[in-house]
Image (cartoon, rainbow, N blue to C red; front, side, top):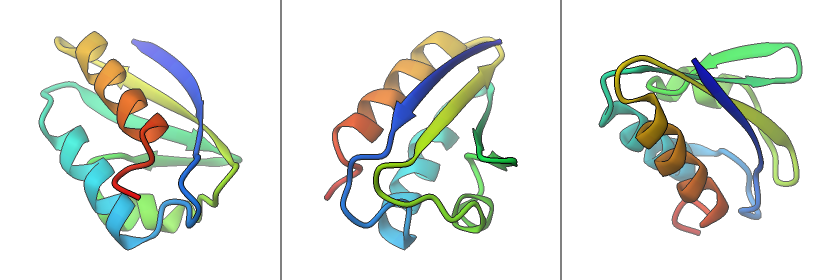
Length: 87
């Protein structure tokens, strides 16, 4: 299991479009992909779970990957978040 904290930089946070991009990226990997925000643990492969976390711009989340391809999954997801998730 590996983790990394990353700041949400896109101006609208994880609303529908960026959440969809995030989930699609997470779903490309076999490993478990979750994130922790505040007191919430969300499944990064579920749009409803991501939206339910109510992550806003400037918030910091901890991405947690656990499984066979965890290293490339974590790098890909952190890069996507730092790149603004399409915004």
